[in-house]
Length: 490
Image (cartoon, rainbow, N blue to C red; front, side):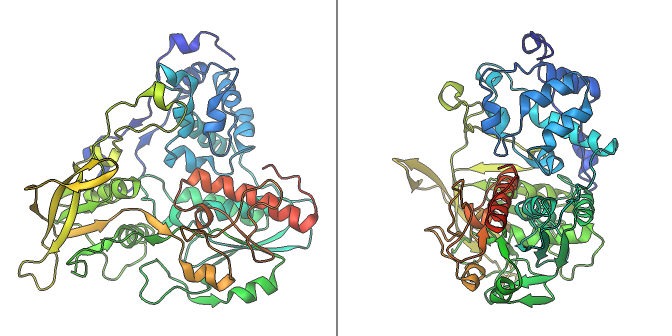
């Protein structure tokens, strides 16, 4: 603990943003990271608690007090070594993780939490600048072949860990570039895709083989799930060719809104809208791109995906953007004695909201309307709702019609695509996810021999940091399965 009284002397320092009027003109990142001195001050605020709840609040169990102290001492190399020991991709989490570690920070009981996420961001950015992030090539090859299906954060983490212990790993991705929803779900202004690209190069040097444009199994006819595959492999063929298969696809089945008028033109899932813009940003041409330019946009869904739709719509030049949330507006501040160290219930406003957005809470959509526009949506019929005894009730006399030229459905994801799991014969749980436990021994194994599952395909829609955790843990289980033991961390 470098500064014993630091938590009493220094205030929390937030990362800065470029001005909203400037950043909405482009799709580049706009967060202004901490300077060395600011990072040092944030590190000094860490109390080095006897029981550091931040460690358990972080899904990958980052060793947070240690790297906070090292940053205070400006020892960036050792700080990176500590961070890298638990997190394969801190440049991802340092940008897009909601930081449950900060909610669990002991200082957060009656003060502002240590800026753990901003410190993590600072460590990894400096590590890349200093040339500290290098390939870790296995000294001995095992001769065992592992297929990882799905190249999001769970798949990338599993593939990297398995390659580092000498297995021959092939990572399959149905779309044309590696990254899963990191690539085609998260806008570039939140995380530029160069961060994924340089990790891919590192993993190639470590021995991972990447196969893009390959669909393993099949998608149901008429699905809206993004699929740019040019080749298909049958699940049973994959099981025959490899010693182990790890399923790490996403929970890509979007939640729909089956109300009258749903079939009108101009109503799209968020995951139709967002991937197209990422393709355009990558220099690709997208035929029939969904555009919000000059339109009155309504985003249905109050979470992060909805926020991403808001930010993208503003960059398109939307006439107006309104975001709906079915639940009541949360309080401005959480009840810390009630919720700490768990994730608190409170109002959260993103950088996209600050760029321009009307937010409507406790509102439901009853019907999509088209008024003489040839089957195109022109508005929504809504009603206010209230919650009593855990049930939703419509407020009498509160119906109204709101103008809308483009409606984006961002209400979360219900499950992985069932046909993919069915192709492998993997049992599903009650929510349609791959059924696999997380026991220390034999964890992440499905009912099918040699087949494992990790990430959103197993746990359902979740955070990038949870995907990294599950990918790492599944890699250890696969290594144990193949070799009888494993030195990989869990």
